[in-house]
Image (cartoon, rainbow, N blue to C red):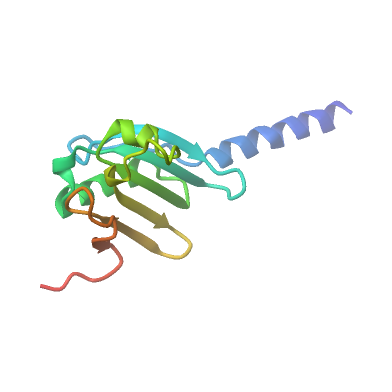
Length: 145
């Protein structure tokens, strides 16, 4: 009986260690800083994280958002799916689901990373009020000079 109890505890412990995945860390000097407003993990799909973040309005450029993507992928290195909604205003990010008071002009970008499908892109607007799909950066397409 003790053998089976020990084996069961050992297997549970091993499963917890494997399920956690590798430890993620963000290298210094990577850039692309943001303020995290909301972080949630989906219960229906394993290894999926949903984020709501704020970036300063002047940082909605290809260069900055590319650094943001590197930072997010470094910090959340284990999930197979990362979905980030990016705002330029913290108040709007907090009120995102309150359609009466939310400033939807502040919803400026989306980042989607889908490891199984190989999707990795950011869509964003250059100015508040423009579509948040005004510019598309597809990180899977080859860069042509």
